Amino acid sequence: MAESAACPGFQLGRPRYDQGSFLGRLRHFVDIIDPRTLFVSEKQLKDCIQLLDDYKHGTLPPGVSSHQLWEAQKIKQAIIHPDTGEKIFMPFRMSGYVPFGTPIVIGLLLPNQTVLSTIIWQWLNQSHNACVNYANRNATKPTPTSKFLQGYAGAVTSAVSIAVGLNVLIKNANKLSPASRTIIQRFVPFPAVATANICNVALMRHSELSEGIDVMDNNGNVVGSSKVAARHAIMETAFTRVVLPMPIFVLPTIIMSYLERLSFLQRNRRLMLPIHSFVCLLTFSLSLPVAISLFPQMSEIEVSRLEPEIAVATECKSVTYNKGL
Image (cartoon, rainbow, N blue to C red):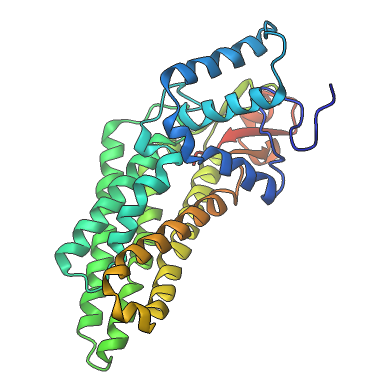
């Protein structure tokens, strides 16, 4: 039976959509972050893994369609780490990033923050980010717990320091009107979070720079460990972590500053928080797949750009590596 364009023939371990285009990566990551996969039972997961194993060994039961196989691979990729083969803890999966991260985003964007509330929300945000970064890292090399703690401490310290410092500067800016001061304060979370996210990724994955990450040939065989590939992986991931919070912490602030002036909301102040929460959820849900689609998860790099020992270990012109998410 011919496969439709919407459901191409299944290829084990290959993405369903073209990863050479942004649109293809976007469709791929919309699958990966599908929050419905959070509700997959242990039995469903085992059935999906078994189905993929049957396909791999040529023992697939009759009547199984490509659509079923793609769905099975989607569920496995959303739950199982590609390097360790272990389940990722639910709040730290990419499919759990929006559901578990939205309450923190709402807290970060609440108006009239005190120094204490700023510290608490920045700490919660970077704690969640650190765990997500660690859970979705390239795990071809072991990462000591001490490195995780160093990255976590550095991210939290940088986020809190920047956020508190900016808030103090704004409060002491005598030339600003109270209204201007309030609006500017709402934008403080973005530079704090963006800077901390870079520190978070760099510190959490610093060991990859010294040890390298595995690179694979066209058949998926590891041909060596590359520090150059590790540098590319970390830079690409850090860039997405700067792009990701940009609409999340900017658009809701602009939208809410407009909505709060509406006479309807002026009369119904109790609706402010629900509307604010919905705007944050919507913006976060749209921003996440766009940001992580900037680069493919399994990135490709020319062998000529890597270490000489890798160039002599393979005849391939390019190799792939897991960038992490």
